[in-house]
Structure formats: C-alpha cells, structure tokens
Length: 407
Image 1 (cartoon, helix red, strand yellow):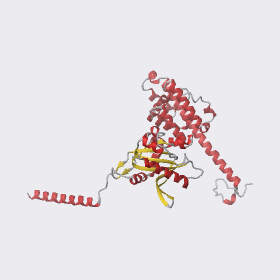
Image 2 (cartoon, one colour):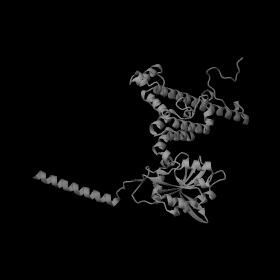
Image 3 (cartoon, helix red, strand yellow):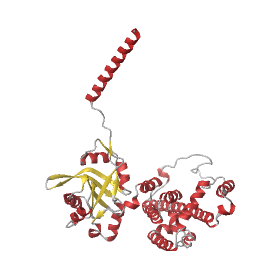
Image 4 (cartoon, one colour):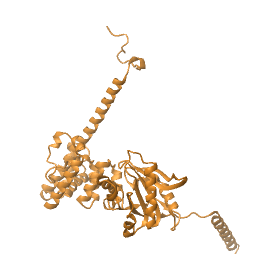
C-alpha cells in the first residue's frame, strides 16, 4: 500500500522544515560529503589535465624524434592535424598551430646539452619535492612515470600547469631557467593566464629577488627568501599619470591609488591594500604612512613609502620608524615581522647599504619608472580667450566673404 505522505509519480513537492530533523551530526556529515566531492573534483581536473599534457608532450616528442618533415614532407604537420580532426571532430587542440606548439614545447626543454639536462633534472626534482602534496593528487598511475628524465619521460610538475600557460611560457621565455621560474610561480600562486602574461611582460624573473635589502640579517632564512621573491627591484607605474613633469610624493601617491587594481597587479600576487595615508597615533601626535599593504602569503604588513626623487640616507630612518610603529600598533602575534619598502625614482647602491647599517628592521629599497605626464586641461580663462579668438576669426571670415561677394 502506498504511503499517503509519499508524493505521487511526477508530483512536485516542497520539503518543509518539519519533514526532517537536523542536528550537529547531520551538519557534520553534509560538510564531509561536500569536502569529499570538492576533493574529487580537484583530483579529476588535475588528472584530466595531466593526461592531456602527457599526450601533448608525447606528440611533440614524436614530431621531433621522427623528423616528420624530412620523412613525409613540409606539410605533414598540417596533414596530421587534418587526420586527427577528422577522427575526433568534437575534440579540441588538434589545430595545426597547436601541434606546432607541442613540438616547440618539447624542443624547448629537451634540446639541451647533457650538462644542462642534468641540472634541469635536479631542478625539476627540487620543485616536485616542494609540491609533492599536489602531485599526489595525480594518482599512482601517473606517479609511476620516471618524471625526472627530461627528453625521455614527462616531468610530473608540468601536470600542475594548464596547457595554455605552457604555451605562453615557452613562446615568451628566453631560457629554461626563466621558464621554470614562471612554472613554479604558477603552481605556488595559482596564477591565471592573464596574471602569468603580466608577470612575464613585467620581467618578474629579472627583477624579483634583486631588491636592495637587509632581509637576510633580520629575518629567518625561509622568510627572507620568500620576501625577496615577492618584492621587485623596479616597479612599472605606467598605469599612473601626473599633471606635469615636476611632481611631489602626494601627486605620485594620488596617481597610483587612482587605480588600486592596477597598483595591486603591479605589486604582485598576494598584496592586499590596507590604505593610503594610514594614520598612526604616537605620543599624542598623528603620523601618516604613504601606503600600507598586507601580504597574505607572507602573513605580514608591508609599509610602503614613496619618494618622487632619488634616495637620500634619511629616508631609511623614517621608514624604520614606521615599520616599528606598525609592529607595535597593528601587528598581531600571528603575523610575521613587518617589512619596509621604500620606492624612489633612483638610488645609489652604496648610499642604501650604508643607510641600512645599525637598522634592525627588515626593509628594502626599489625604484619606479614610466610615470606618464597627463595633458593638462585648459583653465576657464584660457577657454574664454580661445572662444573670443575663434569668434573674432569667424567675424573676419564673414566680412571677407561679404566683401568678395559684393565685388
């Protein structure tokens, strides 16, 4: 006999709150189910990406090792593309251009001399060891690959980076060391393709880690390394514009914070903007920090002072003061030591190094460039003068035309 309370076939019914009785155990169970499903989604996505990348790597290897153009003619890659698209019409990635990318990808890493290959294998192993938790998601079937034999087997860490990222890296980078730098950045920070391209265009590989600093003297080794990776030697402020060639810190600050999204993009992944002219009260007197950030990955505040001129030794003392103030007034017990960042138009290396002596707070000095000069708008008086001149010219033109007509 059918339950009178059960819905009939095809009948729509809204489940009311009194139909079930939930408790803490039920909530915990549902949370566990959600976690398992999300974990399964991540594992599935990584495995699918890994299999596709392994296929691309092997096809690129075939195109190189079989010397297909010498063997079957100059148009053979186009023919392979047609054959694969004919067999798999619903599949993506078999365009002629994509096949050339596969060949270029394999050649980029595999066509090195033995010494470079040996060093490259060690570098792959180091990065893979750092990300072994993520690699574990690939499953035993892929982990069985001899991942460190570049040119013979597929490097496992490649599976953690999307295909289009690999294409951008191998087409834009000048060497393998630079490419590995961006691969590791992508894995560590989950860079989108656009964010990756911006990092490469900004030449992060060249600028990152070269900032003048005293981090190794005042931070633990690991934290010092991370900070140097995050902060740049030079910042491209091409997104900002000032009204004239001679400008001060306030105008520079205003130009930068007019577009906070662009500023954060240039600063790098992980920066959170706390505020501009952040007030701190010390001894009953208000002080103002130019720009204050918090870095999520470093777990620390970053005090940024801007100078629209070359570095002067007294700048270091002021930055030291603000770093100490933030440590005492804002930093919590869970935060790492506050970092000071001075960004100026130019610097002398010796000046900076001598200025750091006797200072016990971690800080670095960087430069900036590409500030644009915005065309100034005319004043009301200038507009009035131009209008009067234009009206005079029109009257003169009409008078001349009238005179020619009468003549």
